[in-house]
Every structure is written in structure tokens, then in C-alpha cells.
Length: 515
Image (tube, rainbow, N blue to C red; front, side):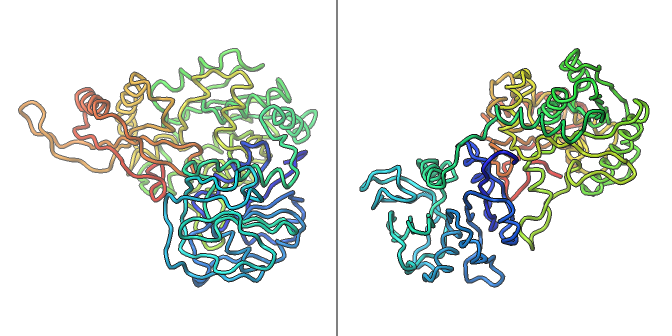
């Protein structure tokens, strides 16, 4: 990020790598995630002030296990290795790493031996609960490394090389299960000499300046305004930068939640120099989805239709030079392969640029932010609480929540059921506690009995998760009486659904959305 000292996180495949970046940012430092195989020349060009090596699922001795280029340790900046990252540092510097006799998974007790390095903000003799997840161990340290903390099963749980400023911890300070994890990260940031100047206040001014530089003095911009916090904040930043040269378009693709168009139009009435243009393109989108059941095909067809609509509307408005998108950092991470051999989980419609035929540049002012950072930014820009904390809604809308073929009738069915789910969650006072809650219309029918008659109708799944950034999520333990109310209301009020299920899958291994 221009103007900020940068910390680079090298990703070795950990499920919680993104949490490292988030914790560092919360401590006032801009952090960027790069794949472990990033060339050293590229790293040097980033001019990082410090580097963190993430954990990972591999043993150091697994075939094809990701390796560290030793030159990374010669860049002359502090390096912190977490779990697998610790092994990489130890092995590269001449230490010995072996499979552990006793593996540690879950909670462990760490004892502070020295208030130095990773444990500089602690007191010798102090102990704390930390989260471990490892099957290897450091058998012998390289020369001049100090042990500053240990656990019952791990003698080298926290190590430090003062002269080379190399740090290593066996546990995961980035997860909430580790007590005072931020103190470990903060000590590292202090040792690296970071200014701690990253935050929403500075970001607004920098984003506005970057938008002006990108768009120029005469460039025009259109925005696909969905009513979610991402596109809304992106639009407000662009409006702040270029004023009336921004035009916002709301597309009704026939895949929206109940009354969504009316709510969005009300939220943004009088908010911009130019009124929001609402376009009913539902027929186009539904035609493109006719007969389609594969989720990736759905996403790609919706993305293509989105481009068609915006291209046409831009021409009606006299043309536009740029399209603003609310792309977030997790979108980029999930769509782009960070780990070499891994596969892309799913395609995001707003990642990867626009087709050449569209002849517009892309403005993505939020591309470097996590969702919680965007929400803080929205509050700073004066957005309403209802909009800032509105649950995320996927770009493809109900198309990825109507499993199987998408039709207007099936969307209407899901809309009615989903509205009941949201209403009951709000009534229970749990909306802010959940990351997302929604209904999923399943491609199955089941037998039921209603009154004295047999039914053979659709099944609905309710999905509710807790999360901080959508990179990981856990299923929400909703009260039984709430689940009961939702189920009874859906079955009684939504004709065509006779069975309701509750999804108790976490991410990973499942995704938040079903498709």
C-alpha cells in the first residue's frame, strides 16, 4: 500500500494465514499476503520492513512440502516463523527438525523462560494458554538461537536470534484461542520499527488520491451498486474523489432477496450527485440460467450478463471510462491460487478484470481490505448502521442458493422462506452476532403430511455462520426455539416447502455458500 511500511506474510498453506494479516492490520501495520514461492526479487521490490512465515498443513518431510528460499532470510529484515514457519527457519539456519514423539493439537500451556524476543511483553515464569497444531518439532536449534519459551511437549516453543532478528513460535498467536497473541505480534512489529500508521482515517485520504490519479481530471465512472456494504463504500469513496462524474446503477437481476430493490433505492435516495439508475434485467439473467445446474457455469453466465447490462447502460449514459467494483482482499485470495498446486475454490464475478470488448478500466478501491476494515470505513463515511452491518450477499445472488436449475418460481419460493429466516433472527436480536444467515433451496423433494393430505414438496436448508472475515467460519448454535419458529413459519406460510433442515458444517471443509 502506497505510503505505508509493509509487512509481507508468506503463505505456506495454513487455514488461518489470513488471520495473521488481519491481526497485524489491527495493530496499525499494513500487511500483504503472498504465496510462499514468490521470487526473492519480487519480495525485495515490495520493500517489506518485516516478513512472517505462516504455518501450514505439511510435515517438513512430506513429498512436495513447500520450502523456503534461504535468500528470504538474507533480506536484512526481521522474520517471524509461526509453526511450520519456525521449522523452515530452523532448518535453513542449520538446526534439526524431526517428527514429534508427542504431537500437540489444541490447547497447550506455554511457560515464559525469558522476557525476550517473541515474549518480550511477558514476565519470566509466567504461563499462558496457547493453541498448538503440529506434528514436527525442532530437535536442535541452530547456533546463537535462544529458547525463550517452552511447553510440556515442546522445548523450543519460542525462539529468538537477536543478532539476525529471526523469531519463531511453535503455537499460533494469530488465533483467538491463544492468550495474548497480539502481544507476540506487537513485540515483533516493535522490533521491526513500524510506525503503526495503518487505519481507516489514513485510508480514506489515500484512496481518494489514488482514485483521482487513476480516473484523471475528466474520466467518468459507473458503479454496480448492490446495496451491500462493499459496493456502497466503494461508491462513496469514488463520489468523494470525483463527484458528479460517478453514475451508480442498480441491477435487478431477478436473483435478489425480498423487497431488496425498494430497500436499496430508499437507502441511497439523495446520497449521490446523480440519482441511482435502477435497471430491471431479470429476464436476461433468468434466460441465461435456463437449464443450468453447474455452479461455476452459473457464476460465469451471471458475470457475462452483468457485463452486458453495464456495457449497455454505460452507453445510454454517454459512455464511461471506468467501472468501480467492491472487490475485497478475501475475494482476491479465494479466486487466485496462492499455493502453487492448490485449486481455485470458486470464481468471483468481480475478480480478474473485464473483457476487452467492454473497453473500460476497473477501479477497485477496497481490493486491499478485509470485510471488518470495510465496515469501519463505512461508519467513518457516514453509512447507516443497517447498511454497514447488512449481511454479505453473493454477487450471483439467489442463483447460488437455489441449487439446481434457477427459475423465477424457485427464486420466489426461496425469497419468501429467506425473508422469514431473516425476520426471525432479527426478532431474536441475533442479527449482528451472525456473519450470515440465509435459506438454501435444495434440489430435492420429500414426502410430508399437511392436514390430512400427502405432500411431495421442496426441502429448505437454513445456513447460519459466525465469522470475522469469511475466510473461516463456524456454524452458529442458534437456540432451538428460534429454529423451531423458523421451521414452523416456513412450512405453514410458504406453499411448496414441507421440510426444513439446519446446516451444521463449518468452513473449512464446507464453504459458507452452498455453491
